[in-house]
Length: 333
Length: 113
Image: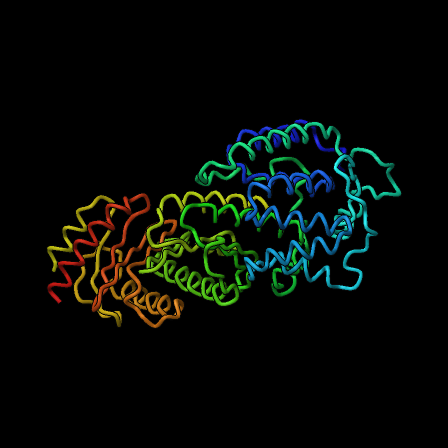
C-alpha cells in the first residue's frame, strides 16, 4: 500500500508543510512519517522540533507512539508521563500508556535507533486494523528498504520544516492557520475504516476507536487550541462520550466526562427547540458568560465544544472551529 | 418597552423580539406573524435554565447571553437580572450589530423593570 502512494501527493504534503510558516506543524509532519512507518525520521523530527518547542504536546505524543512502535517502551512511557503531567485528561496519551502497560503491549524487540537508519517496519499498523494487516508489508514479507515510493520528497519537507522551526524558535506565536486536511495528503490517511458494528451496537467509549483516527482527531483539536485565548476543545459523540480532547497548556484541565455529557445535553435540547420553532437544524450555540465563551458546534452526529476566554474574538474562534469541523467530517467520511 | 423592541426590529434581518422573565412568561413582544411567542419564550427559558445547570455554578448572573444559530434562522438572547431579551433573526443577519443593539436595549429595559 505504501508504495502505491502517488509521489505527487507526498510532495504536495511536503510543500504544504513547507509553505506554512507555523513551525508547530513539525508534529503533524512527524505524525505523517509515523503513520507511514518511518519511525526513525519521525523521531528525529520530533526530537529536533521539541528542542525549540518543548511544550508541543502533539509532537511529544507522536514521539511516544514512535518509541512504542519501535519497542522502546520505557522511552515511550517517559514521554507519556510528561504529557500526562501537563494534560492529565489527554485521553490518547492515557490510551497509549494503557497499551504499554498491557502484557505484550509492545511486542517488538528493542530496535536500535540510529539517526541514519530507516525503518520500513510497521508493527503498530499491523496491530491496528485488519486492513493494515493485509496491506502493509511485514518485515518478513518485504526486504529492508525505503517504504515510500520516493522518501526523498519527505526528507525535503522535513529538512525545510526543521529549518523553519529553528528560524521561528524565537518568534512570537503565530495565529492559528490550520493546514489543509491531512487526509488530502494521499490515500495513506485512512482514518475511519467503515466498521459495521458502529451502527449496529450502542456507541462505544472513544478509546475503542481506531487509534489512527483518534490521533487525527487529537491533532485537529490540538490545532484549535492554538487559536489565541482558546482554552480547550472537546469532541463528544451523540451520547455524550468524549471522543477526543485538547487543553491549552496554561489552562486548567477539562473534566471530559461531565463537560461532554453537558455539552451533548444542551446541544440536543437546543436543537429540538429550534426545530419546534421551525428555524431548521441547529448548527452552533455560543454561550457567553462572565468568565468564558463556550462554543458548541454540530459535527455530523457529534458535538464539538470549544471554550475560550471571555475576551476571545468570537469570529476568529468560529472560523477556526469551522475549519476543524470540515476536517473532522473529512475524517469521518 | 414596545418602542425599544421596535427599534431592534428595525435592524435588517430581525424577525422579532420578546422580553420574558426568568420563568418564561412574556413581558413584552413584537414578533412577525408565524412566530409563536409562547413557544419561543418557553423554549428560551428552558434552554437558559439548562445552561445555568450545565455551568454547575448555580449563578445565573454569570451568563451574559446565548446565540443559537440554525439553518433557517437564529435566536439570540441576552440575560439581565430579572429578564431575558430575545431576538429572532433570519440567517445572514448581522449578529454583531444585533448584539450591540440588544445590549443597549437591555440597559433601557433594566431601568424600566
